[in-house]
Image (cartoon, rainbow, N blue to C red; front, side, top):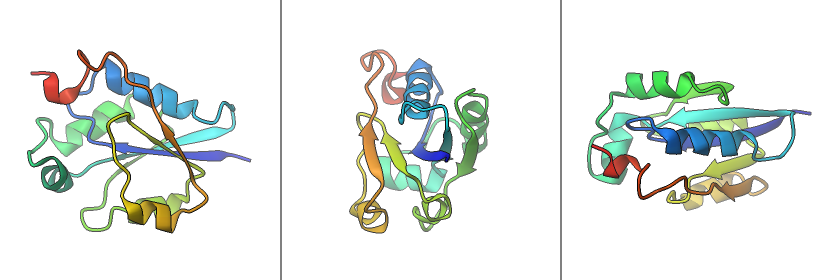
Length: 132
């Protein structure tokens, strides 16, 4: 049985911290039978949540994540319903970054989904908001 692992993020100015995050997520269930699904946030949603536009376009961010060897499936997020893609995937595990928050609606929609927080990778150096 394949374990479906879901991660989502902005992935702006793709860097080693993102690589570490995706590697940790892929290994989130400690099995070889897992698939990593990644949702790249839409520019409109990033602006709404972070109160700023990402520096890279959504197409560039999508391409950068797509190149990562740990990613099995990649999606550009939905602009209006952030749960539409997770509903299609029905994940077993949600892997989030050390600084990400999970909306209450996710818990309500997926009560049996395990949540795992990934460890930071030198956050004083590899954090998109700090990188110029």
